[in-house]
Image 1 (cartoon, rainbow, N blue to C red):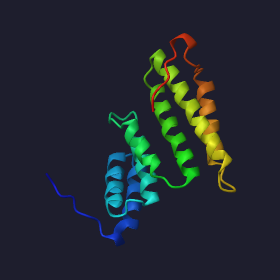
Image 2 (image 1 turned 180 degrees about the horizontal axis):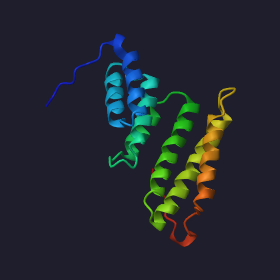
Image 3 (image 1 turned 30 degrees about the horizontal axis):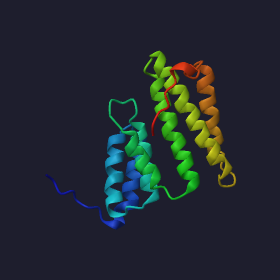
Length: 165
């Protein structure tokens, strides 16, 4: 229907700064759109991929549907092993936090499972983190506090059905 207008390569840096501002203004849809424009010009731009992933996960719980498959596709494009592990944790943590807002008992079990998966991803990131970077540890601790603070527990063994991702 529409042919999107391409960004000039010289405008990419400013566009990414604008995307970050839109995220900070709690407008993840705008940030996502800008990232997609950047990636149309530079498909492997790692900063744009990270910002896209964060914008997508900012939308969890905001009435927008963001598919797990789409998030996984962006994660797979991250070249750095540490970043892939770390941002996998971020995506799972944010989905777990969204589950906490749902209020149903099953949502509590789902939140626990997602937060534990996030913690596993953070542990993987911790093993390969750059020197002086404790971000994965900070996120692991935040997940642990959420689980304890909300009294989350695993799903009873007899009703457990593994999630496919």
